[in-house]
Image (cartoon, rainbow, N blue to C red; front, side, top):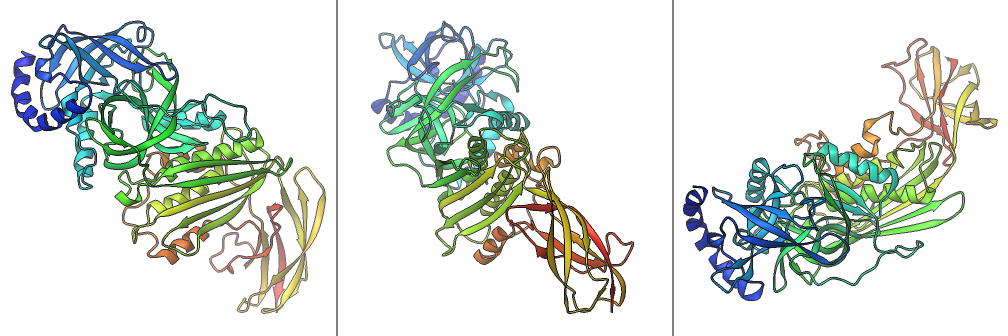
Length: 592
């Protein structure tokens, strides 16, 4: 019954795909057309469950499913999958069945792509190989919206075996925040050990660049290097230099320009409860850059070996101000500017905040609550002679959110690039300079004294009394300008310091998991009607606007009015770049 309903759909579909399938068959492995796949066939699946070695497992065809989105229902078994079932990261695992009409030669019928929610993860759906090979290697840019809509329909009808987005080179609370963000987004985000040795660390697992073949692990990379990020799955088919994988979309965004990478699998983490939030998955790390992923289509991701996509370096230098130790993290960020940022968010926005958090965690070898330091960000774009830049100092920390305020500032900066609507920006380099210490360089204002009578337009000297956190008291003479136009009579001169930077527990916007959630696809509640900076000068000003006041300000207002409408604007009267002065003090004066 199912097969008879499917016949009409297949008859209409096969002619469209015949040319692509025939060409691919000539260059790659032989394929078995879907109209020759029958229930009861005993087949073989291929994937990597440890390291780089391709392993086989048994696959039995249960039935062929017709409709507008045909697939093959199968059951997997064998030592490679008995303990874990078909896990996330198996996406794209090729299934080969013997062709009874051709001496039982094994031929590819398609890729394992969707789960059914069964206990044990063994009953899954296979995307037909004809459908996958019908996806263009380089789609037209106008295909993005259509592909996105189709992919959304696919996700609504079945649950794709997600290609886990694995971050290599992250650990500790940074890794935990990634996983928390993934749960909020309903997306598999994992932190894998870094298999490639980085500067200053012990040698890790190394391997030569892999020759991708059906069953190999593959990653669609946002970034490579010390902090790498890529969606890990399995290669289904190789046609010359063209590689087909996953059997389902990554984001369903159509034309892409991402890194095509090999990947190393540590193991398969077992969870037989195939639910939205708990399922088995491959613990894997993206590896060498091998080519360009160019199509994120409803039925496959498709790329080409050889030339890499546009990319630029993200360089992070972190200095421990206590030991003077410095580390350098370098990542190569895939740049999709030329094709219009098809997901609306750049790889820099998705990977950069994670890399900044990890650098801060690595340099302090932890995340003490009492920490201070600075961060300067410099982003060079081809279209602007001067780099976009800002610098801020920071005071305060959280063991659960390493460098939360710094990460939030970097995310805001990269977000400005993503939302720039009045031109195309080509980033050529992004540099981040962190300097951190294990000490709360903060003091609180205790009191202030000064002249009781002041004259508009003149300067006065105010003595500010303060005390360092867990330290000594001190005094500073602060020169305060009395603005012209103040009303005569009694006013309050108020000195106001800058508080410590908000971290987790004070503002969700600077909790790492919340920052990662927005960066990796969450809703930042920004207005679609806000045009943002109108030109490159305004964009530069917006970057500079990320710099925050961190000194002591002065203002005048009427007695008893703590939040006056007629107060003078606050203006800075004292700043120590090595010490955050917080709190406030009030001094009653008479204006003559």
